[in-house]
Image (tube, rainbow, N blue to C red; front, top):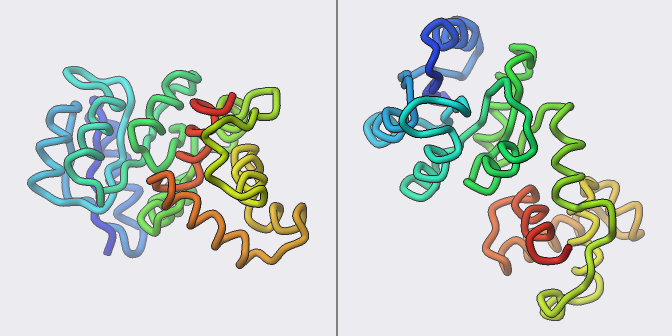
Length: 211
């Protein structure tokens, strides 16, 4: 059973989400919070698996609350659910440690699937958000190899750049003529070396360091 904490400053939104998710197998709503401060407190008390987090709230924003939760409770996954798709909010949330960014117009089945996916360690993005993330993280030009890439082999550097462009393991394998298992092993090693959690954080790292 995946324990979920709902965080939104609108009571009706929380009630609606609670009703929708209560009908999903394997998902249990364990609590609600109306602002960022309350969210942090509730995470400590309820120990949820996933926090469904709004972005713009009183006291502490979704980004600030996500950052604090990620710092204090690194095993708790935060999935952003918001109406806002501004570039700075998306990047801010992912840098703060969010495992996904969904818009509130997402179908209910997509939301349930996303909750299950982030619990398993996968990043989830709304279809309209994904191109923004790829563009923001990679930029229009190919990232330049700097001193930071010298600790990686040529093959690892290629995979870093392809991940930053948003390619899946299958697409990378087809591009480089290697197996998906080999790609997965490379990605795991790269994330470990950079002390990063997932592919999205790797894309952020490329944006910050190689463009």
